[in-house]
Length: 157
Length: 178
Image (cartoon, rainbow over all chains, first blue to last red; front, side, top):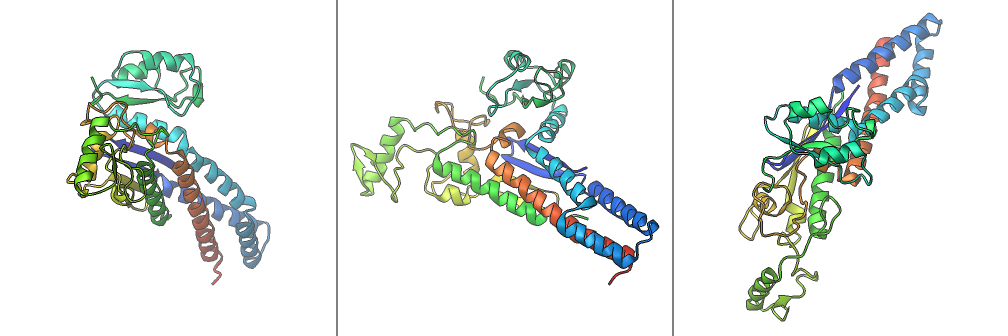
């Protein structure tokens, strides 16, 4: 399915919001649609009747289109969640410097693990990997974790 | 194939406008109001404006263009809101950035943000509690919740529209319907 990613660079003063694996999504969609058409043919429906049913499904968001639309919407809703966090981790994996565990400022209560990690000293990406990266389920808040690792480069000493 | 260029155009505009509006409103992307400039800064601004014959009370200008401006940050003139941030969109995403154009005061918008925004490498250490003008990482981008929510909606709407449109094209092709 599609992936929404956010990457930011404070050095260049930019951030990018992108959607990836979109063509994979389209391929799945087309394959499943063709599969539906084949099934309806096997059931003895005429091509015209099949088209009318697809048209109805498209217009009313029923059946396959409805399910696909629902799955798509759930997927895209990840824009404010997990995908951004994982993307952030992946970007930092390439960075050879010490990283700080940062609590998400929009979260009101943090679990003890996240509080402990944020209070601990900076670590390399590999060291954080051993402890468990944010959002990977190693903290008490599990999948709800919204913390992130941030580069310490350029931070006020 | 999906083409989300138009959707990402809208999203880029949304974020650039949102960043500019926050500067204009003197509110960081974390929702925190900007701290005021130091009295010494305000006073020197007042002297400059006094020379130009603008309204001044005890060395501090009260209004400019109808807005109380004297204690604000980033030389707010409304220009920042309009021209400080920009974006480039393509079929797979949008990149939002601080403009390298010159602010009329003699520095680029990028340089002004570099000196004033929390977490930036060249931040002016004299600023107490610097505002978060521009995000430094993905987590801070997510703080722009209103824009994030709208962006998700724009992408959803556009993907659903294209799925409907292209689904019918595929069906017509497969079923040989003109």
